[in-house]
Length: 267
Picture 1 (cartoon, rainbow, N blue to C red):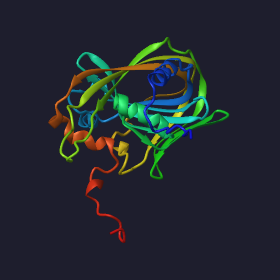
Picture 2 (cartoon, rainbow, N blue to C red):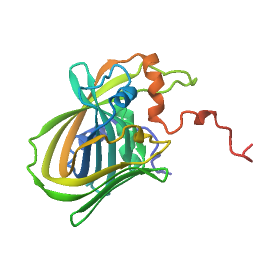
Picture 3 (cartoon, rainbow, N blue to C red):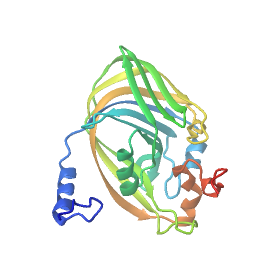
Picture 4 (cartoon, one colour):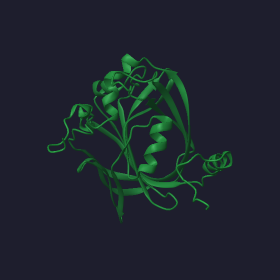
């Protein structure tokens, strides 16, 4: 009697190669998103940067809230990042990257070390009115509201670098299993439409996503645009585990949850 294939079993070399080939041939994926950039407290930026990252000359925060036109299903993707430098390379260090689907989480977290978490991410436009928001645990911790004020000339294709720390907490609960890695993720971005937005950014208190500690002191710009990008990553260096440990909580909602007792009645 022939048995149906056990799908959790090992894949053949041909199937593995086909997966790699399909991934390399992904079509251009365009997103519509709101980007807000502001100046914040320089001491707050310095406080959130794990070594060897350092502040840049401008204490900037960038929020990117996008609706991504993925084949088969829409994706909401967000990022809250601060300006940072690694040696001579200037870039952005994301503190939290909410995504609306688990599929968008796994590759970014496991391959690059992106701080992605499940959340609600929305971009809405009604005529000239625009609203974009990131919500987790029922708290809309970032909201951008405004009115489209006119077309802008799309910028030339650009190259942007994000910094991530890739690590695995140790099995015994102390430190890491292996040395953490600092990853440079480079994106080549093209914009086909860009509009200026007049509005404001609201940061709400959340114990899970405490972005309110990086307040809007001077709003630089808000834009609404359509863009596409590719990305590639490389390991820039292995980092000192003891230096990174005080910042590991940034990756998790509650670092003390491992100490929680089981719910009542479960014993």
